[in-house]
Length: 299
Length: 312
Image (tube, each protein chain N blue to C red):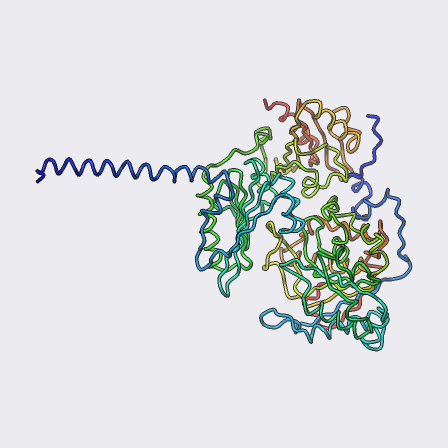
């Protein structure tokens, strides 16, 4: 036919075998080098407390604050939460809290408030902290930001398979829909944009009532959320997402009775590792610390 | 004084005049009913404001192909990929009860209303619209050029009953049914899994259902109609794709690109053994391109293509 083959196809995936995920394969021919330190494990803290929700599934802020403090302290091997936060930010930092306002499952407002309080306790000026989602490109604090805290609930997602920490930065571009191709495999590129790169100090994946299956135009069903009552905290967004993805997958398999792969497969998590060097998605390179409630932990 | 006969005549005349008035009065109603299917605005004006304990929460919202992302986040891409013209959204609320969300999408054609319906075919079949489905907390159907979604924020017995009531009311307001895409008639019927059929135009949607390539190696687009379907014959299974192009030249170009990118061994027209032990093959016939993406046996792959060739 004379046409040089440049497309990555399903057959490339088949040739590579099942050991290599499609997400990592998608990155093979591209020039981006990976920057993650391949010898170092990424620490991920999973903290759970079943009392974080009351009988009406409302969040109990004091319990949530305790969970956050335990997780951040363990993550940084700090002696107490206060010293942990002072290692994350400096008083002259300008901090954007990248939250998520999706109406069916937003970042819990008490968590935004707690993060803000912890940042201010660590010395950051109140006027230099702002939580935002849709308006981050126009928010003056985000425009001047020197640091970001990334916080969002995990959920299944129509195009990317999962709504993840990596995906949460999609509002840092003016045309998010341009990242929908290939199950949003290129999302990791956003983290290399000049107004984002290197600023993220902490990633918090909210697993309090995650969504493990979506349906309909709004891709939401209350019947497919469950009270997992957890937070996943890490400096490595890819490792945190990969850990959350394992929990969602396990829940799907248990709920539907047998293998029920996340559809579409969340390739962007692997691609964020192999293509964009944002962290590690490989289980063997993740140091998982479990804290708190262990019942039905799914890991 | 009027006699009995003349009084009878008068009653007849009054009845006649009344009939004329009634007929004249109902004429605009008939006109309105006919026009329901032509405008979301008119449809909105006739929609129920009450269903069970739920009352419409004013105002309605409308979205076009650009603003739909403000409403349904990334999934708006699905509706855009089916040429969505407008979406009307109405929320029904009741104190202490889960909100019911009605979304009516004007897809511009019955073919695309059917297409967007086929994007998600899980659920129990229900007798609403041209085809309807119910899953836990979500009822959807298509009719004419409209796709209708009724979503309960939490499923309860009463909410489900109210959703069905609302669905039937919308169904009757839409009025006329519409045809399905003609390309459906080109699918070989034997062993076709009806629920597996997806009608689409956009490569993004093909990749959603069956990842083929990171590039548009079949030159799919707004002007192409594609069907993705599963077959089962004698315990053997196959995934099959049929694409209709605007011209034989466009079909030929797409076939060449597909062979070069995906199936270089298939240039001579024979079935190719893929790396996963399945068989793949392709065939162009005029403006149609048929691709057996994967089949359990060579025989099944070749049979499907032979049958496409035989369809007039």
